[in-house]
Image (tube, rainbow, N blue to C red; front, side, top):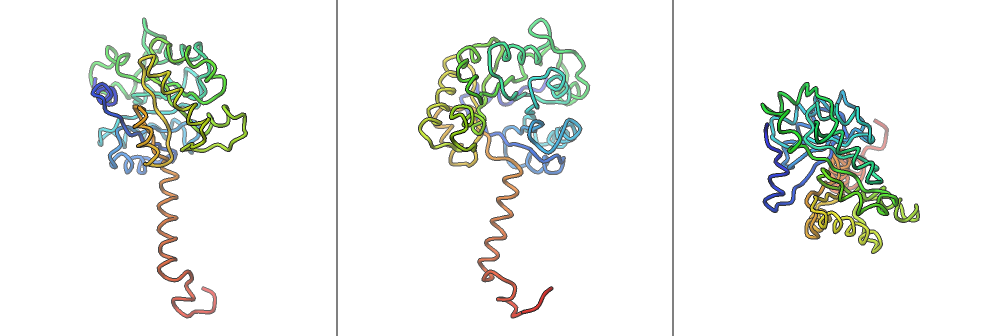
Length: 271
């Protein structure tokens, strides 16, 4: 089996950069895969896509060597196992709120005797190379999202779940959970209470000997998170990157031409 490059880099003390795919397009996935990310996560939960989009996206990403991962819609064994069979080397599972739920996640991702994953690696048996059945349990990453007040209350029990590889913070939902909706959701939190909550999750993960990831909105915040000790940071997503680049290009063009077509050409009529 092709080794999981994330695990190798983490073992060497390197932090990794994850990209986030919310557009259901193999072409956009292929483009993102060529930009130098260590891993790319296909977002089946909130992305404008489903399993039928995810599979060809994984195929398009394969040539780059980027590690393919998926955020599943929920803690549901069927979609977790199907995403793994499709080629995911890691699963990010939302709304994991207790030790029991973390145990369920781990069980879905490991073949017996370590778990209860059903055997049927239809595509990954080819994309991951020979030896998948024997080696998958040690290579596939199980990451539980910490993003609710309940999860924070059960944090120590979650991070010490046997077989859990790491936790992943969704700061938007975590903000809603920690502040009971008092603060608006969003990335790159600067409020002292949110920074404290984020760093509490990080510290708990480190104390338990597992990895920690954080979704960030900007490169500056991602670098800051790595400085805190996060093993993996995600930078924005394809939707925001596309919108931001387009908006910047249009705004700069309007600035250069003085704002309107009429100002440049002297036209007063319509098109």
